[in-house]
Length: 346
Image (cartoon, one colour):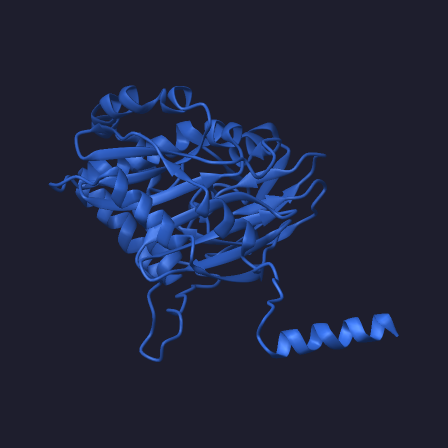
């Protein structure tokens, strides 16, 4: 009888609104990470400003990096069915997890591609169909059906356009804008050529010298907020300081491209970045499956949008970009402009 009375009292309390059932939000790992992030002292060179971000680690550092796994032969990347612009096939043949970040570029085959979303490849994954964007508009010829890697990551501006619009055409336009902004001309219109241009390399060197040691100066950092002039370009956060340090060399090169492409006036302060992250911590979060391990979460706030790869309740990587995702006239997300099995590109 006492048990029955207890249940009746509890139900009555809930109905009366005097008690609340606390259900953890679906987006808990992502928003919880953001809500505990502190913004550190800024480091600047020319128009590029980087803010180290510290917080409580949420995940393991024991993931092998995507480019390293490709170079060692652990991960295989191939064209799908002779070539589809927005899909490649990837397989992890070893016994360790492999982390690939959205924007990481695979080179060769019929044209260079970048990962559309973060992906965590499970050990012995088998062949997976992985969504990608083309970053080389002017080539569609076989060097082989397999891809290699040069350790490149698309710039924050390109990643932002891809994340917000999910449009292949927007990615191509952003690649062209990088070429124009830095003054690189190449028939294949490959983003990789921006990294490989000798003039661009010389211009990038002072930036790299300035920021190369940032993770060592802030050993607890989980990531950075990146600003060019007075505008936030992106935020990259990782589940552990070690994973952030391991990703840093290629991330830094990508941020430098953003800075070299545009040199706007103005600056941004620590408080503004902290407010941006605070606002993002209250974002609406929706879950969706990924082709690999874990799940992908989309974040949508009034002034920020992004995604988080979550594995075993911990964030592996989270990115943020300013503003909301681009919408169509009917309020839905912008359509992807995929081009399937394209045979010629002009």
